[in-house]
Image (cartoon, rainbow, N blue to C red; front, top):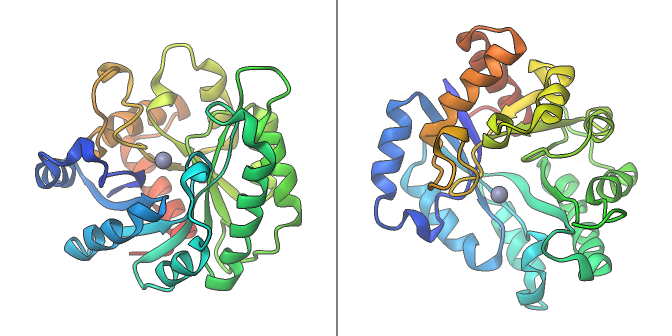
Length: 266
Ligand SMILES: [Zn+2]
């Protein structure tokens, strides 16, 4: 069994054929999905989507740093209500984005700091988003990892969270692993020029990665420019397996075990 640990299947990109996408993904062996509802407007539709596929879909609820400008002042109680639901398995995606919002660093840091305690309060891991800026010195990874040094969440399971769509350096990866975070590996792992990323993933080892799409964004190399969906997970998994010297079956077993170590089994 394969798991897509980071999907945005409620995105309007899937409005015309969502059920068909789910069917195709299940037929491809992708049997579990973590849907990311990361803005207040996405929380109720996320719940409805998970309720329609109760065996296969779980949810992360949070506020993504890109949505900071539209955030109503009273967002926190609504987020807490969502995180109390049985289908909620994570807080996220939360973090720092210096690519799209380099001018709002302090606001982003405050939003992150407001959400980190929810992991302890609801016993849920975090799904972290970090994207460095265009200019040197706009290092979202180092700021995020520094902020996490004071994070008090200590779960019984192996991972405290995941650096989703990991795109940092090996030093960032190592710092993340030392903090109890898994690395999220998606279509970017297959991009021709991402040698350093593949090497970082190899050094981290198959036991520390989980697979994801971040669909509808970031399809693998064979389909760049098109819409991404969870049926691409086997293609990402196959490339990761060959790069790490594992069979497809071993890679699937290890990444699925890690996903359950992160979110709990479902
Ligand atoms: Zn995402």
